[in-house]
Length: 254
Image 1 (cartoon, rainbow, N blue to C red):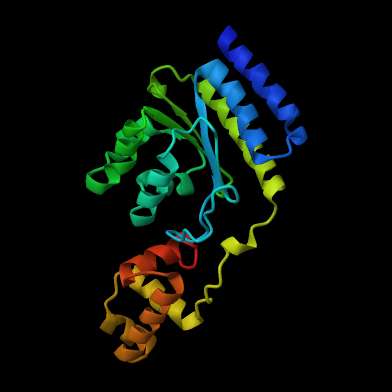
Image 2 (cartoon, helix red, strand yellow; image 1 turned 45 degrees about the vertical axis):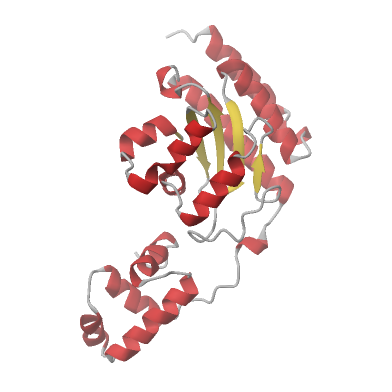
């Protein structure tokens, strides 16, 4: 099947961006040059690129200009609104980006997840700033590069477009990583879990109650309760359910 002139032009422009990316010396230059390709060919703006938090809901390592980079096309005030709300209740898009290896649009995410209640805030915020759709590209489980559009992308977004734009996001993230270097501050100083604490968490994740965990491990209930409290502190969790979820996200337990 012949490739359309539009796709061919997008591909050649993106290839030109990729082959010259090592010449770009700042994150702003990387985003500006990527934006120059997508805005012209697809009327799609670069929104941002950022390192995902190592620990879920740990925003201490998120810093604009250091681990998060915004493009100048971003509407004024959007980032401040977004970051404030994300700290209170991370939207479903962030969860999907951390778990996914494929890019997705906001429209696709809405159809797939059918968010309710508080999970709808990212879409409401987008509408507030006239952002009709996003295209989020997870890169290596570490970066996300996101584009935005004033139109619904799924209506005219071809598979070829997606592949080329995702490729551009991937190379942009690789270049950004080289430019900013290692970010050791993101790791934090959380204490490691002990073997007993991990054993308690594994049993809790299987649905066992406190008394059952104590019997299975041959320990007292008070000891199990103490282990769980220490785990919550170490993982920055507010309760046992969140502690188990955080441990699974960090691959501490299966």
